[in-house]
Image 1 (tube, rainbow, N blue to C red):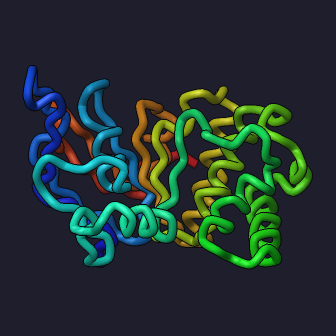
Image 2 (image 1 turned 90 degrees about the vertical axis):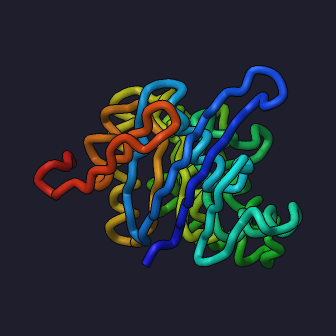
Image 3 (image 1 turned 60 degrees about the vertical axis):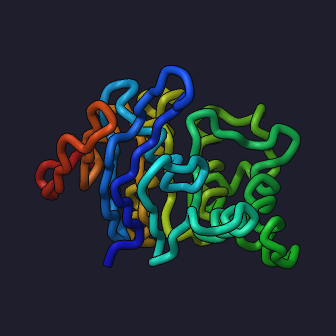
Length: 234
């Protein structure tokens, strides 16, 4: 069963002056447990599509349903609350809060949900162990490498036990070793915890590990490839 249904989504920026068509009638279903890469040249609409699936940007036309909920039919406040409880985000620039420790960055999401402090602490520690950073609990972002910061960002994205995680160019600022470690960790979470990951990426290293590759060209789905295990690099 699809957890995400994108139907005939179009996005036009700057409509009143010189229109820019970022997406042109994209339709897509995402199943639970997928490890999917959305790829394509710069300007093909990858990040726009990810932002629309995540409710961060609104389509000009078309609908997005998450578990049969049309997210753009909600009020802004209800959509914010829906994102908080149902969608995890990992960004290229990590977006960690500089003055907070690794544990506090993860707990912050749970605190926004109104969870008890004891639960926030327990879940944060559990996640840091899951991503291999139990020894970095009290380190601030400036004291962590890029790869470690991105691992904290993944842990934060998983804090609320979301329906899926959207990762926008998560390896763009990482070296090869950090990228390999991050992707291995995400694959393990996908396989062992059935966490659904959807990537927007230029990185061939991500594409090589993906089980499904959706290629956008000029804002449209050009190809949609389900990949067999023998074609996937580990």
